Length: 189
Image 1 (cartoon, rainbow, N blue to C red):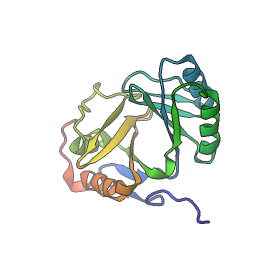
Image 2 (image 1 turned 60 degrees about the vertical axis):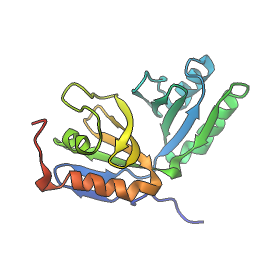
Image 3 (image 1 turned 60 degrees about the horizontal axis):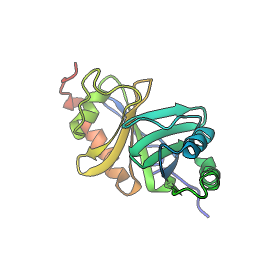
Image 4 (image 1 turned 30 degrees about the horizontal axis):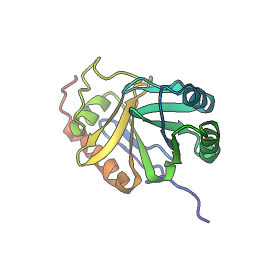
C-alpha cells in the first residue's frame, strides 16, 4: 500500500505572497439539519467548534467547521483521525437523516500568506476582499477562475483555499500566476 501524499506534496512558491500546498488534512462532508441538537453536540465533541453561521467557519481544539450550504458542513480534522470521526458522527446521528463522508483524499488545500494575499485572491475569485469586507472567520464557496473552490481567512491573516484534488495543480499554478512578483496591481494598497 502506498503512503498518502497531498496533491503537490508540499510544493510552495514565493512571489507577492507565499502560496503553499497545505499538506494532508482531514476533511469530512457532513449533511444534516444544522438546527439538530444532536448534530450540534457531535460536531462540537469531534472538533471543539460550534456549528457556524452562514458563510462562516468556526475553530475548536480538534478542528474547524465550515458552512457549505443550509444542510452541509465541512469538518476539518486531523488526517489520521478522519475515519474515527466519521464513525463517531454516524453513530451519534443514527436515526437522524444525515450523511458523513471522508473526502480528504478528494480535496486539495493551499495557503496564501503575505501582505498582498487579498489582492492575489481577488484577482481570481469574484469576492469583495477590500479591507473590512472579508474578515477572519469568513468563508466563501465560489469559483477561482474556471474551477469551484472554497476559502477562508484565519486570525493570522492567512487565506486557505480548498478545491477538488483533480484540479489541484491548476489551482496552484493559478495562484502562482496571480502572485507573480511583476503582477502587482495595488488595489488594496
